Length: 193
Image (cartoon, rainbow, N blue to C red; front, side, top):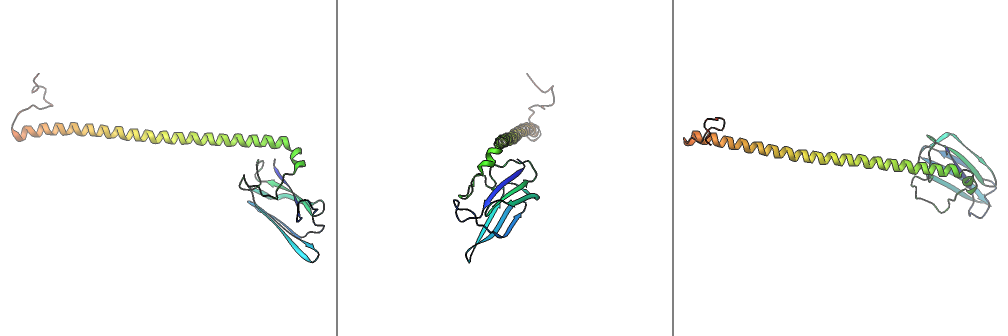
């Protein structure tokens, strides 16, 4: 699960063999993409092959290798960086599947158990990330709700204190302005029951 195995055939059609001679083969591996370019000749006519893949994660260009196998075919072994990563698709978009990309069945059957275990691990880690995100989201929502409730309670208490203060001020001001004696709320003697 630490490497990407790719078999690339330089041919105009899938059911035809690859070109016997491939010139100017350029394989460039950068961190987020793979670029392959080659030229083959049909008589005097040059045919240029280009492959540019924006990859799902990063690749290590220093620990990758390739070799030519049969006519017009190369095999790439690219180290995933940092490894091990489980990739469902080599492309950055997991659901992208170009019409000229096929599964290398012999390699798939050879590493099938590891791939299925890796996919299960990937699904489990994605599920854990989603659960953790939901938990964090719920905590944030609860915190926001608690803040709203706290603001409402503070506002209610402030209103209650203001009402009490207003009533107290009304009673004391009424005594001194009107000259009427209603009773000082702080004086227990003036209270009549």
